[in-house]
Length: 474
Image 1: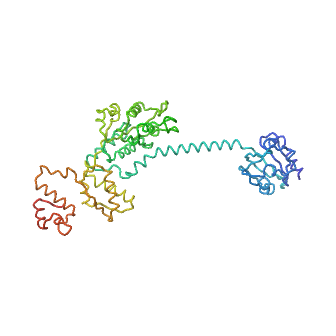
Image 2 (image 1 turned 30 degrees about the vertical axis):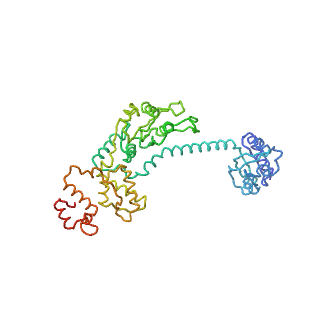
Image 3 (image 1 turned 180 degrees about the vertical axis):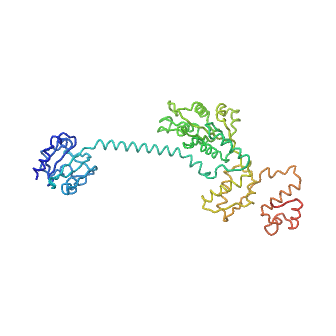
């Protein structure tokens, strides 16, 4: 039988000796009958050392981790037993010097007249391929880590801005607020620089977010920098990035917010807090759309839209020498004034409805409305903290509420305008006071919770005064 497999291989010996892959021929008993030169070069085992022997014990005896690889489990020898072809890509061969190398091999059965007479194993050293694959995986891992880092930096603004305001949007029906919304619609589709002015808590961030979402840059990043949150040196690093070793603690090169916002929008909050040096660099970016990282000399070009916001009087700061005049005019291309809540009191019911819907979800509550008495209280307050203060008050009251209708328990100082009684006739002051009490008592006149008792009047007297002063419940 052995002669038969030798004769079979002899017909192709010249070709098998010339190929770059290793070739072994085995008889049905598993003994080597052919070893080509490429096999000798890869394994270090000469043909005369292997012919006529079971060569599994020579260079296929162990797995890559050194575990024993029994001959009866060998894929090559199993092909000799069952006549099934096998393609293997996850094993190693051991050289004569004791080292190993990864291989890919195919074990093919040989039949003659329908009878299994042996097998041929063809293998190749895939060390370089595996090394290249390993380097590629390492490179891809580094790219993935860098991508994840950039994605985290680019997406941070969404969680920051949406944390408290997502879903509430820019809501209001007052003429002042509607005029402001119209300005947003007019400038959003342009690339013009926008300066948002307004007190703290009015929602300047919302204006910036809506400007971005309505613009052609909506699919690119919206990146925010709070200029008041960093020292002068750190702020420049945040804006423009830095090179490795640019300052103490700069152990790696870092991209700045300008690079992250390329093709998108950069929102500079509290712009009045910029240092003089940062103001100069910002002016150059606005003029040239280019900058250098801190500690670097390479010029980086970007395509960004600037939206700035401040609660300060920049014109006054220019007069005081605290803010560059040329930068102010660059930023003040299209100013938008966010009105204070006290200037849009009529929007409070709508704002309450929106904020309560958010709080229901956040606090797992089911507040379906707010009492008219509570709305009257909110309307008479002067709101120094604006919408942010309204949101905080409502959240506290919702937590304390045990009813589906919110009753504001907190006491408020009335607006100075509401308390201003100078030069008013006595009957108007009395009328306003009675209406306030009636509102607080839900227009109940008699009884222990009635307005008459609060005012210290008999029920009939209060009704008479209401008639005289023409007080009617609407």
